[in-house]
Image (cartoon, rainbow, N blue to C red):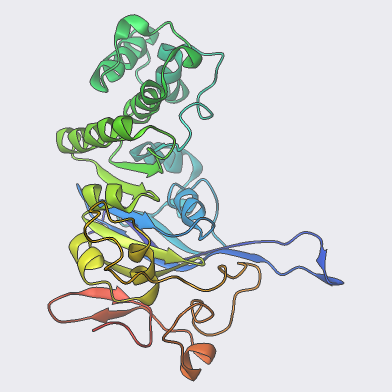
Length: 326
């Protein structure tokens, strides 16, 4: 049984205001997503800004109610549980935010920030035991407990992100959702945080949902990669399959945008440059959502949305494309 599963998740936001004299259409932030996360595995989620990654994360954590679809934890639908039970089960899914400074209350000390989840759940009942656990969590992520009285502005960016990780780990979750946890950090600090997450995953048997724009970081972290475009998963496969044998044209273009660090190969590899901008999620094109930018577009693509279908053979994947790469 999967640890965490999304079944046909849809999230449409009601539109506000008017456009060209007509009321604007609803924003289709997430438009029918299926995902499976196994225990101790890492799912990388990639795609352009605005494709719906952060909205999908909020749905997976039951922070927002989907328009339709289900989120299951250990086979049980989270939103169908009674409120008290749902609150208890949500302890098993915690989040590391993108901005380590904006996600921390500047008025609270480091100890108070890490201890706050324990205080909310009153677990354990003894306040001194909660403080002791908070200090242990700080030490676990490489922060000196002697600095527990400091406030967020007195830490560096990397230390603040470690503080956010300690805050997420203090409840001993089974799933850790990392929403671009290294994008606001320097490159050297990024490597430290990535290595820390990998070590913590091994030590505590965590399952990770890892969102990042940096495909090199995703390749280092993920076991499986899901590529998202305009609210939909267009390709999902094992990490090496996605990076070495991409099947969807959008995945190929996304990988082609990564700079090559070897100066001897620059100018020799063919780079795929997509025409135009991504369509608006409030007015998506008919048929395949990628057909307005795809070089393989045919009449069928303009009228018929491709369902996610398994690609068999040596490079297995699930691809939503009428004409995938072979």
